[in-house]
Image 1 (tube, rainbow, N blue to C red):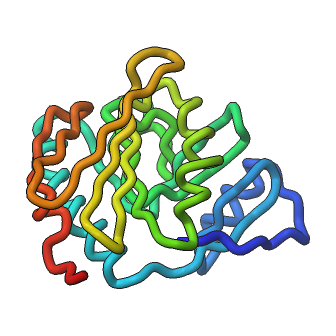
Image 2 (image 1 turned 60 degrees about the vertical axis):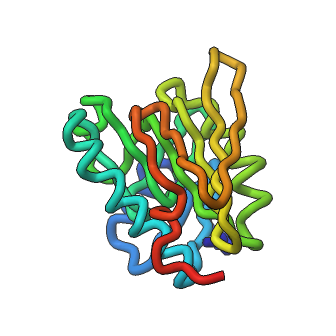
Length: 188
């Protein structure tokens, strides 16, 4: 999904949250500016559904909760609220907030031509400020490829890519998943 600017109004985080609770469409918040979110492709929605189906039983056993694209992540240090395609939190503090989470362990974004540069660039830069984040996953909707960035230390991240026929390792959840299951019902 790509954000469209709605630049006529500066909002505080509290004003944004109040307005978003009443909004008919989703908006991301970027340091006072609000951006309307556009719709997603069939492939995008199918991949998110497949991932949620794969993650849900595994995360429940661990006391974690997965959320799809209607849950915001708050990045206080950057004054941002993003709607990742999927996030998993295992932090009990996240049960105290109903409309956003601040301590995700895993964030997944589905790449499209219109969002790829932002997802790889500014968004990942801001996500890295979340101390709880252990893995940032990029899933391509146009061909079979999953990329995972893993936190190795405070400032160091490793990178791993998976292709057709491989098994994707979500180390933050101790979960292995055949890549074909992520792309179930997707035809390229």
